[in-house]
Length: 415
View 1 (cartoon, rainbow, N blue to C red):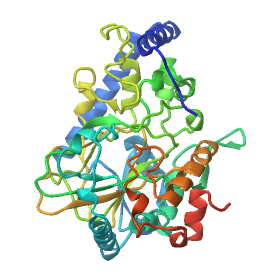
View 2 (cartoon, rainbow, N blue to C red; view 1 turned 90 degrees about the horizontal axis):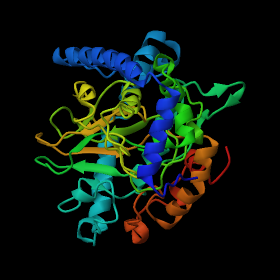
View 3 (spheres, rainbow, N blue to C red; view 1 turned 90 degrees about the vertical axis):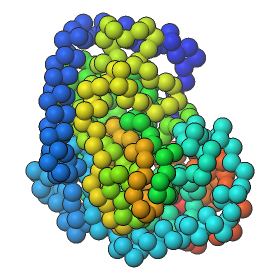
């Protein structure tokens, strides 16, 4: 299901007025939230200044602590992100990196015709050598997605959420749906990939669409202290505006698996490690200094940008992730602000496979048939631009490369 708006300006202004009427003290509510956020951003900045990691870290061998260690659970739920180290051996991760390089080279990826107008998210990056490669079905990507290691991690991560209400599960924490994403191969010296701080998975619909408004009901009622970013109630009923820049599945976490060492300065990921950012942005847009028909620059069908004009408080907490080694993974809540460093000033390639967590639920089950068809044909994932480069790649993954788990995750066989 998708959400459509014919007249965004009118819809935005009508919604803003309705939300203000619902929360007459919107200015006072935002002022209190802003003070809380400023305190948290100062805390993040102070920790980062010591050289310590603000992002919680855990070894794969101890992943079960996500269910048994209350202090760790509280920390991850506060920061909204987590590094899990040693999920795969460096040899295995490096092997996947080499396999993807061979896959791209043998299929002449860089010499095929690329239409920059297709990809609304990374189109500006396609003018030179790409750093994000629009391939989804290499054997390396397929093997990593269906690995038992990531399946285990996602089960633990899913249980950080409140996924059951009144005896009804919003999603199944033990069963996963494949969400096929791309791969990054960023070469040293690259200055083309930097992405400004943003949130994926919807922009103006967070204010306008009824499902999203239910998710953020505590924020819009002035009870932002009661908002729980990890409460799944309503999350699987949201509807997004269809766009190659918007994820239409429900993800408990976005994430990637490192295929090479990378850290601050290597053109890698940055985060604002806080789950308070989206409440701040939601209430900020209701304030009197925001022009009519505007939501602090949010645009339909695009990522939700953190704008220094409107959200400068949040940018005080932007930090680069800690040093990652090949085989490590990083995970962040879908509402956590993230960015990519402008410059890769390191000496080696900075390579990752994007793999998040999309647990089994009705929303994700509706996505599976289209994704399974794309896999069969070698077409681009349905959520992305229809570049379809892999249609004629003879060495792309086939059904024979899928494990039983991989077939279940694609919806080809039942659980």
